[in-house]
Image 1 (cartoon, rainbow, N blue to C red):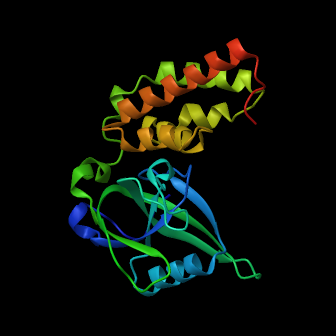
Image 2: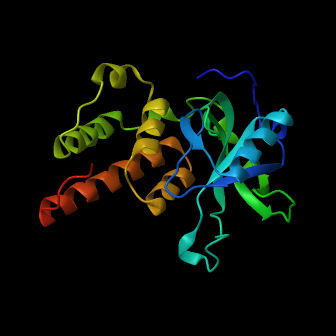
Amino acid sequence: MPINAEYRGPGELPEIIPVFPLPGALLLPRGQMPLNIFEPRYLAMVDDSLRDGHRLIGMIQPDVTHSHNEAKPMLFKVGCVGRITQLAESGDGRYILELTGVARFKVVEELAVQTAYRQCKVDFFSFVDDFTARKGEDAVDREALLAVLTDFLKANNLKVDWEGIEAAPNEALVNALAMMSPYGPAEKQAMLEAPDLKTRAEILIAVTEMDLAKKRTSGDPPLQ
């Protein structure tokens, strides 16, 4: 989706951003993530993001495995910032919005703030390649990716728009499948932190193959 702001490098993004901890949520550069915002602290976060003009929110997973505070769990060290590209009011106090991924970031430190939502100082320079659309997509094994997707769809009795998939560039295809994949926080984090698109596709293929093999041997019902 086209966005009104052009981010050509890390220096064009603020070093302090609001973050939205959400387990299992994976946002990737140029991917689209729908969000249903209803908690007062996150409604305030959206309002502040619109007010300051940046329209940016950092999506990050809570690291519950290493957390001792359920109310404020630790965060993984890598997330992805997205720009609010669509927003609608529901009429019952909620915001329905869509984030378009811009670039991944590393958390430098979480700040002590007065806002109810959390804010972090972040570094985008470790992910400078995120600012170049479709970088490295020629290295993706598209045939292997489509083969495992076909197996996954058959195993779960699902249908897909093959015309749209065949027309999608490799970056859009890999990132969309990764974001929509039904896997857990650890697998999502591994795909997020992959150094390049080729590695992300390989992780997605490997995780899917392991999931399919487990179901074949255990006789578990398919994922819904």
